[in-house]
Image 1 (cartoon, one colour):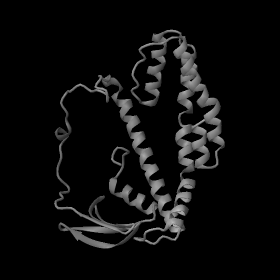
Image 2 (spheres, rainbow, N blue to C red; image 1 turned 90 degrees about the vertical axis):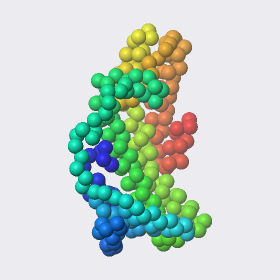
Image 3 (cartoon, rainbow, N blue to C red; image 1 turned 120 degrees about the vertical axis):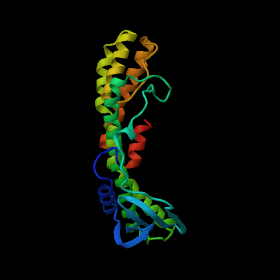
Image 4 (cartoon, rainbow, N blue to C red; image 1 turned 180 degrees about the vertical axis):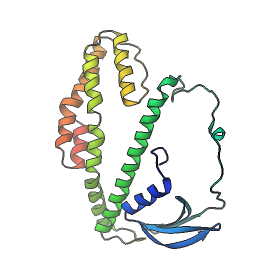
Length: 247
């Protein structure tokens, strides 16, 4: 949430309200007066966007967490955020060009924002599905209600699933145009670098490039563009999308 910018407390409240949460009162934990919010069988006591106490009763299982220590409004200087000049590497331990870190950070922030939005959609869909199936807070759904909730959730997730799959179209068209003209390993890796810069990913450079490898990659790209993409665009259910991807 912090990576996407803005105030964490206000964003947290907005997200809870979007998911159907309600403020039901006030409480005190460790001397801090916190707001009590209830959502989907869970009660949270929140102070400045931080949950100091959480009580949940989901599907008959009760669970309580209470903070034992909390400090707020502590003065922090820029020096506290300074890092040593260590080498930056990817998951495989290989060095990353520091000049690309800005673009990678931007990509990470976009991912964080997208994940935040997906979480809000998911939780909102879960709340609506539970309410639609007639499940009361703290109540364990029966088999019929579970089936109703699952169907409702799947229908709610359809737009998000389509958007996630279709978001690759621009990169795939760029890859097709570039790789079709690449006859050497050097040219193929230029394409790979362009795609990394565009997507913010850090794909490893290709180690070989020949006619057979080029043919296989182009077949995969064309399969996505000519088969999967049109199928997903016309899909009207999550099951249809799954069938598209498996083609």
